[in-house]
Figure 1 (cartoon, helix red, strand yellow):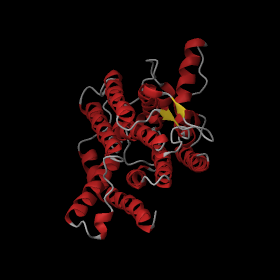
Figure 2 (cartoon, one colour):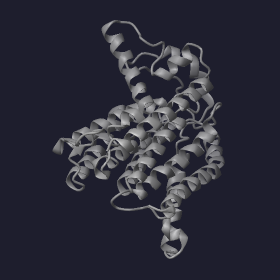
Figure 3 (tube, rainbow, N blue to C red):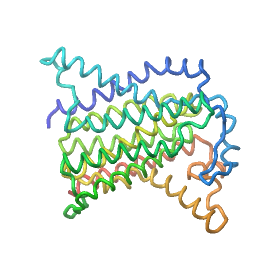
Figure 4 (cartoon, rainbow, N blue to C red):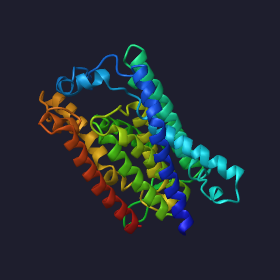
Length: 354
């Protein structure tokens, strides 16, 4: 690796941030012009009852804050990738030609995942603000995720010969074709963590830390194109975060959360034994706040079913902190701090435990 590799990772990230900042005023204009907010404000709990505590905290904001802010992320990423690819094709012998990071073996799968997730999430959000206000049913969204994950898991197994999971300080654990259902489970779990997009500025900071972590891990494995792809997403997320800090100009919603969570699953697997690393094993550390988000929902639902009592005032966990009196900015900034700490811990383990 040399300075060119570093530039190849950093330049797309900065470019995506710049593109995101530039396009956001146009996106925001149309979101407000077409009143792209939820037609049925409020939230229904996973058990089908009204989320009263959540609605006390957020009902009024949901009436006039546009959704679909996640467009800033994937639009800035796709524009950056397209422009770099165009310049590298037209001027292959120049510096621009060295920046192209689209490659069949490293970036096609995560890029496809990002695009499909963004499209399905976009359709869900359109139905949420234009249809009956319910979006795509959970069953349909899960069907798309399962089908896509089965294909990607099969591709990992059949085409890339991924049959094991990297274990820190030990030999990889071989599971053979079970890598396919395992990838599906990881994808579903990560998708469930998308509900972390519930407080102004929260999800952007957490997702940026996760993708930055995998950019570093991929770079350390000499998967430079994959590192550049991950870094480009970081740039798009930071542009989104610039406008999502309290008070948020818009919410990320499904068109942002779905592609990001599903792409994290792909990155974790591609930085595992394929890159002679432990990308999967460090995922619960790097994404610890995502794990906590899902776990708090599971704990809450289980407790209500078995004990008839709630553990948290509101689930997921970040809304519990709001309910006990923490202002939104305090919840977000403390989550940012924790996400950086967990990211550092996960990256360090990934670098020393192989």
